[in-house]
Image (cartoon, rainbow, N blue to C red; front, side, top):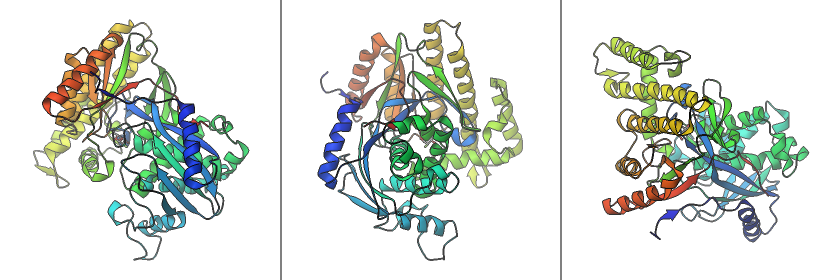
Length: 470
Ligand code: GAF
C-alpha cells in the first residue's frame, strides 16, 4: 500500500550539493568539502565484538554526510539537519573536552570537572547529546596524532560542521558510528598534515587499510571515553573498512579484516533492513548490563576474552563443553560477582553460539562449490538461529522485533534476525528478490494490525566504506 515507508539512500551528488548550499546559508561561508560514512547491517556476530568474536557486517548505502570548513579558534560549531535532533548551532570547546577526559582519568585536579563517563553530568556549554560523538571524535584524533605525526591536529584547530543522515537515528544501523566516522574524515582532511597533502578526493586514496583501522579505533575511543557507551568496535570498523558487494569478515581478536564477495549469495536474493522505529541508545545502561553479565562469565572461566573459550575452528560440542565448565565452576551458586548465575549463563551461551554461527557462515560464504540457493537457505537458517539467541539468551529483543521476524518469514523470507545492540533498532531479512515486496507489505500490515509503530524499510546493498564525496 502507499503508506509503506521506505528509506532511500538518495543520490550522493545531490545530497552533497544540497549540503553545500545549506552550509553557506547556515554559516555564511563556503564548506571545504563533504565527507560520507555508511551505517551497517550485521549478518552475524552481535554482542561478541568486545569478546574477541568474529562478525560478518556489511556497510550500507545509507549513511551520514558532514559538510565542514575549518576555524582557527579551537571551537566546534555543529548543526544537524535531522529534525528530531536539530536544536540550532551548538558550540563546543575542544580544550574543555580534553580537560574533562583528563579529570575523569584522574589526571586533573579533583573537583575540576564531573566524570565524563556519566553522560548526564557533562557540563552544559561543553557538549551535550549527539554533539559528544563529534567532539569526542576530534578529541580522539588529537590523541592519535600524538603517535602518528601525519595525523597531528594543528594548534587552535576548530571547525564548522553541518550534518545530515539518510540513516534512521538510533535505529540499530550504526548511526552513531556513521556520525563519528564521517566527522573523523572531515577532521583528518581539514586539520592534519595528511589532509593538507591529500586535499579533496585524494584523501580517500591516502587512507590505506592500516590507517583506516587506526581511525576506527580512535572513533571507538570517542564513543567509549567521551560519550560513555560501551561500544566494541564492530560499527566503526565496517563504516571505515567495508567494501561494495562484500561482507566484512572481521576477527575482533585483532580487528583483522577480510572481504567476502556477496555476488553469488545475492544473485537471486537480497537483504532488507526493517527499522522497527523503537529507538535504542547504547548509553542507557541496558547494553552495558548485558555486557557485564557476559564479562562475569568470562572471568569465572578464567578467559581474557570469551573467544578464548572456543578453539580455532569451533564445533557445537565446544560450546557445550564451555557451558559445562561454567556449570562446574559455579557449583550451583545463584550469583556470581553479585549477578544472577542464570543470566550470566544465558549471555555466555549467546556469545559462544553466536561465535560458532559466524564461523559457520564464513565457511558457507567462502564455499565456491555450494550452489547459491542452497547457500542462501543455510544463511537463512543461521539468521533465524541468531534471532532466537538474541531473544532467549542475550535477551535484548522486544515484541515488535519478534513479530516482524515471524511475519517476514511467513511472507517468504529465508531468515530474519534482530541486529545491533538490541532493545530497539532493526531487523535484517534475507529474501528472494521476487518476494521482497510481499515481505514489505506483510510486515507493514502486521504492524498496523497489531498496534506496533509502522516500520521503515531499507533495501540493503553491501556498499563502500567512508570517503570524501564532494
Ligand atoms: C552496538 C555496539 F556499538 C557494537 O560495538 C556491538 O557491540 C553491537 O552493539 C552489538 O553487536 O552497535
